[in-house]
Amino acid sequence: MDRNKKPKSNDNYIALISAIKSGNTDNFYIFYGEERYLLEHCLSNLRELICPGGLDGFNYKRFDDKNLSYEELEDAVNTIPAFADKTLIEIHDFDIFSSNEKERLALLFDDLPDYVCIVFIYNTIEYKPDNRLKIHKDIIKNANIIEFVVQEQDKLVKWIKRHFSDAGKKINTGDAEYLAFITGGLMATLNGEIEKVSAYSKHDTVTRNDIDTVVTPVLDAVSYKLTDALINKDNTRALRILNELFQMREAPHMLISVISSKMRQLLAAKICIENNLGKNDLMDICNIKYEFQARNLMQTAGKATLHGCRNAVLLCSETALELNSTGEPESRIIELVTRLALVK
Image (tube, rainbow, N blue to C red; front, side):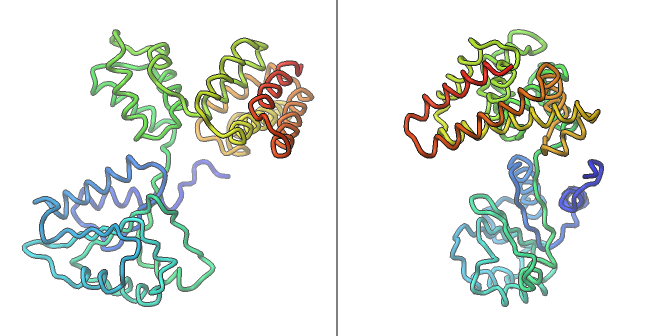
């Protein structure tokens, strides 16, 4: 995988930002993706551009009904804006690809008037066209399709530093990376956590202790900490972290899944080291988002043996199998962590 190659959706995102700044937007967009902060930010800017007088006027139409009819949409598209250049039409969580009116929708999208800006927003349902079907291609051939993805590490760290600065605080690069990691890297989550850390910290520069005191880490981050504790033979800390996982009230199968995932990543890191490969190779192999995650995995794998990493993965697989056929899931997970602690 070429890490420098940008996906088409990223190009469309950049084009959208440029169009909003110039005031020259297109008339058909599809928004989806897990980074809701950026999605809502762009949607807000579109609203301000097209409906400067507010969203209670004649030129803003929103549909939240998943059973939206073709006639309702056609009527909205054909309504000429009043005292404005465009009408903004938002359609939330309407699956155009399962509609019974796909053929008519394709024709409608093929001849949209210049005075509309129609935006399909996917939030609670998945954006899932079948590109093998001609009708799906016909539906979206005129659309600007934008996936709002978790930001790259450098951009996210700059964003975190800027938001701390707005709150009158500083944060160093390492702690900004750490905050992104334990929150999952989503801006919507980070925004609230930055406010909490800024309010709690008594210093000009926030510390790692400030972060750990008030930020609730995501499941993935806790499982990384568990892996580190096991490799460092800090068994007391490993059991304490396991208790944190239990307190998160995740399903036992999910806990086994994340622990297994980290052990597989650790094995991959060890294989990379054995074959003189670097952290970038590990990021590609394991689809890791952030460089510091891969760097930490490589450092942890350096303390482990290849045989031990393989045994750890096998132990996780055995426990996952046992969990499907026996009861007492918490006991099985505690047993797994105990056995992992004994792996050399």
